[in-house]
Length: 455
Ligand code: ATP
Ligand code: MG
Figure 1 (cartoon, rainbow, N blue to C red):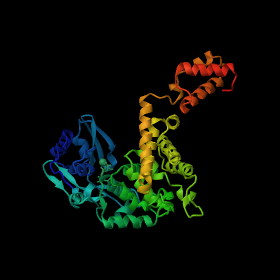
Figure 2: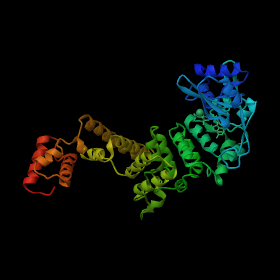
Figure 3: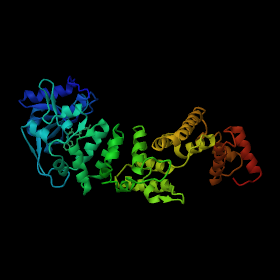
Figure 4: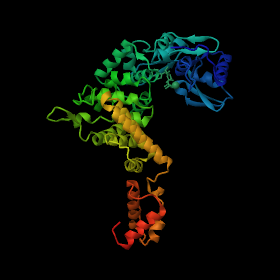
């Protein structure tokens, strides 16, 4: 891994460091920003740490725009050039008794002590424009070798704060790094009993959503189902579950992991793929020839996924979009204009594109020789979709070439009959029985009203 040592500090960061130093304090950039800058990645938050106590910070920044965001824990946010910069007093954490947060925090004058409380070696470095890098736990070496490793003894660090387990997985996934063996062992050991019981559902979901788009997600999912099963216990039954089916080279969990990894990094698609086959174990049956079947697993999976995501306090729209995709994932998609129009009507363009993508990833995670044809069909479906959209094809009531006024003008009285008539016409257009042309649709309407056919 190429490490960049010549870092350009943004001018507000330089100004904050200089101000603290002018008042006789130490000040450094620290944590995630150092990691990302050394990797040459864009830095989204410059976090700073200082030997100044909160009172000393307030004094140093008197006259500046500041927000006392977490002053009790030593954090002050300095507002400069329209952005906020968190500056935190060097801290050591007190005892952890709840498995998540320290009971107390104490301020310290030692940068080394502050770095030692941090979770991972790659997150425990400090950087200064003149003084350079402070790296007591060999974070640079771990960046170079692409390794995720705890600061200190992994088992103790995870016992103190179990969220660190998910953070370790998240960075392994997003950076595509491997886990140091002793850190990996401690994660598995902690998850062999109970773990992640003290972490708020929102935090679990946030880490899961941060982990899923990572380029290293395949290995993380394959190696750590035990971690995810701490808060999605439904995963446990999928691990090693033999599908007894020629289409499947993988167990259910391996198939899920490969399908997720094949997807673009979009939350709805990756989350839907993570949970798409969650109901397979409960829907499993075998025919006389010994072939495995999973009748009803898409609908059952939709219900299970909804429950799982609600348990994790997932926002309603994400839950809904994900669950719908899961419910549809097993319905074959045909490259037929009527079928594609129906899908557009039912799902809308965005969700239908996600569904095609999901089908593709699902197929890519099955026996390759048996799925080539399926992938070709999906390309045709997508082509057809693009053509229909380019032609501005009609797939919902508002696209129809006639409206409610036309229906009433044709003699249908105001009321539910009007909607029924429009839906009848829409059905005919979706199926390709009628073109979406005003005159043809009006003719159809008159034909029905004159012959008193039920609409
Ligand atoms: P990103 O902001 O990109 O998600 P980050 O590493 O900056 O990654 P933050 O949550 O912003 O993550 O935390 C800032 C720093 O605080 C981390 O780099 C790490 O040094 C420390 N840190 C965060 N969470 C923990 C934790 N649970 N235990 C120990 N140290 C932590
Ligand atoms: Mg950060």
